[in-house]
Length: 211
Ligand code: DGP
Ligand code: NA
Ligand code: NA
Image (cartoon, rainbow, N blue to C red; front, side):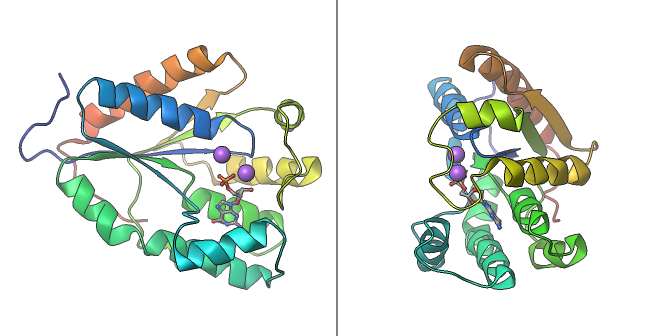
């Protein structure tokens, strides 16, 4: 029934989307349900603002410091790299990891500022490759209606439109699936739950890959 089985690895499942797409709500709901079912599951998010690098990123996002766009890009990537050893061990020991944002946010947000996509991809080469990316789409107008938009750097309608376009450009149909985030929380959850449980099942015998 999907509970812990000896020797099987966990799946790496990433939720991506623009700000206010409902990603974080959906990540929590998904993890809560999988845990209730008795599965070995962990929720992670990037940026992880708790590490020293994450604290620099947090200051940048809260607009209390200014940093060069390249520097910020490398900090976000470093923040993912510092979690790789732990993530690899967890996956190999059978824990599924649900991740709120990953390297695709890294490229989408930095390339939306005008940095080259090729340059942006390089620091993330070698990170663990997700088994599935679930891209939650909400029109930027709808996202902006959801409140609190505009308190952090990047949370502006025209910039979010650029980010959304970059995500669509980066989307790799071989392991990405798009989920409409415009329905009710429960409707969106049902779709994400279905795709996530399929992915857990399909990944258990596959090798871990790298970006
Ligand atoms: P969140 O805590 O998920 O709302 O993310 C904070 C903000 O940081 C959000 O606007 C998206 C942006 N972001 C997340 N990851 C990256 C990244 O790797 N690079 C850049 N430039 N921005 C990112
Ligand atoms: Na945000
Ligand atoms: Na969020």
